Amino acid sequence: MIHSLSLASLTLARGERTLFRDLSLTLNAGEAVALTGANGAGKTSLLRAVAGFIRPETGEVAFHDADANAIDPTEARARQVHMLGHLEGLKGARTAREELAFQAGWLGQVHGGVDEAVQTLGLRPLLDLEVRKLSAGQRRRLALARLIAAPRALWLLDEPLSPLDARWREAVGALMTRHLDGGGLILAAVHDPLPIPARSVDVGAAR
Ligand SMILES: Nc1ncnc2c1ncn2[C@@H]1O[C@H](COP(=O)(O)OP(=O)(O)OP(=O)(O)O)[C@@H](O)[C@H]1O
Image 1 (cartoon, rainbow, N blue to C red):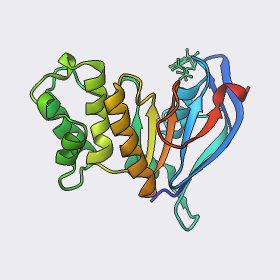
Image 2: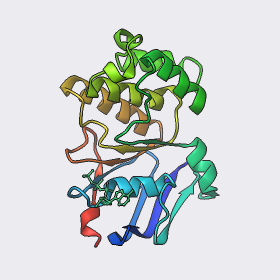
Image 3: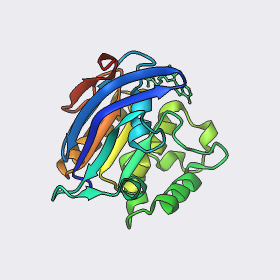
Image 4: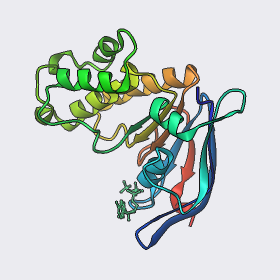
């Protein structure tokens, strides 16, 4: 299981533009880091680089287990990392129930995981609605279900709380705390502080 994530001297560019240079960061089991910075600073791009969707110009993303052995990045990303982006990866024409079943099949749910996610995220009244008919906050809760249904060590979350109301921010905060208490890791791009203790890293400062 991933016990630490390290970013060493990462430089990221999109097109002609360098977003940031030489960003280094270590995240250990039980810790959360909040990536901050202005619009366009590169927070989402950094999450995507950790997830393996963008190749850095320089530097390295490495995953280690509890014995400090390197985990093959492809293996780590395929089985031990959740990336939850703005677009959430949901299909509008599916019902919430179909979406949950699809996600669970795709990601490999634990026994009873979907039921637990439905319960924890208050999804029961939404199950027969098409995803496109859900509000932004309801859709986000549906997207967050995969974190419960198919547990993985490292959560990469892009503004996870932004569409949620106070009640669900608190509930997702409790979910994050439980994840960290169980040895999980959270790297989240945010504009507002996370409702859990987290180190802040200003992506915009690494220029
Ligand atoms: N696919 C892409 N091709 C080219 N440029 C891109 C691409 N995706 C993002 N960018 C550019 O990279 C820069 C950083 O974008 P990114 O989404 O990482 O910023 P961010 O810090 O997450 O911003 P925000 O706070 O607005 O979400 C932006 O200038 C954006 O236009």
